[in-house]
Image 1 (spheres, helix red, strand yellow):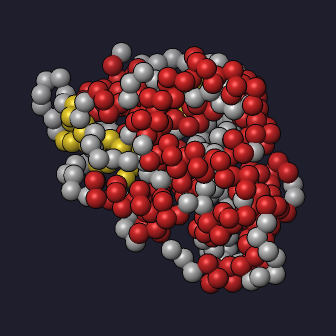
Image 2: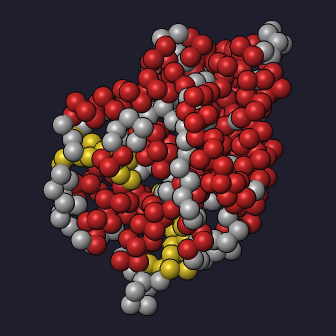
Length: 381
């Protein structure tokens, strides 16, 4: 944990942080940019302003994408300041109370929660549509129900990788996990799914539930610490950033994780066998948290795709942001979908299951793919 007061004192309010902030680029007002949020946190922390719902709305309107971090000449840890501020403003944030309770309950017993949701989904689906809430399509099985150890077909492996499934892959997109397993097996790696894995804690941390997120971090540290493998891989950049950096800030100990793009970038065995024009969408945490830009595009080119440029920008999901700030989220999504439509690309590729879910709301789902699916198609064709 950082010393919040010390971090706030380091901020000189120069405004460089606003350059790539997605919410500021949309609203063009100080309260929707990093500098405005930092000044607000300063005032509340110093007692100049009381905690209020209005202040909570501004602090929680941040996407937590990390676009501001490298723009800060003073090296202020803006993200950590925002996380801590959310914890301080939680009591004043009555709008987020139901969301926090729901997320806490769901993550406390995720298997039971997913089974219950599958049962009641046909009944609540019309209500969700009327309320403008997403109808999350949980699958009839989870990835971790399919097995624990997956070996190459010939029984000969040159290494072992651990797959951190994360909530979205395990419950919503298990086919992505199965795709990665087939790719790893084809490359000669045995894949292990840790039995005691829990949510990385990113949703809790983003909601200001710092103690609860720290508890999940300790559970994963205990579950993953003794596993022997060449790499711990995740298909979700948010999980990777949380395991590596979030845990280090919350507990003092991070987990050396890598996303699928980072792991596959240095591997051979991929040939230019596909022929299509593809647009690549950069997940925020891959672009800003993992410093990835060339790697996914190079992978797509290696398998034969013609990659067209649609620029960078948030898809608008950002965890629970899309539930609380629906209009802003939809505007961001329209921009990304419009960029894809104008590009002439045949398919849209990303490397985040959350972005995949969000983009599929505005782009025909049959045209949106996770990068691991593209690699599998090229490798196993």
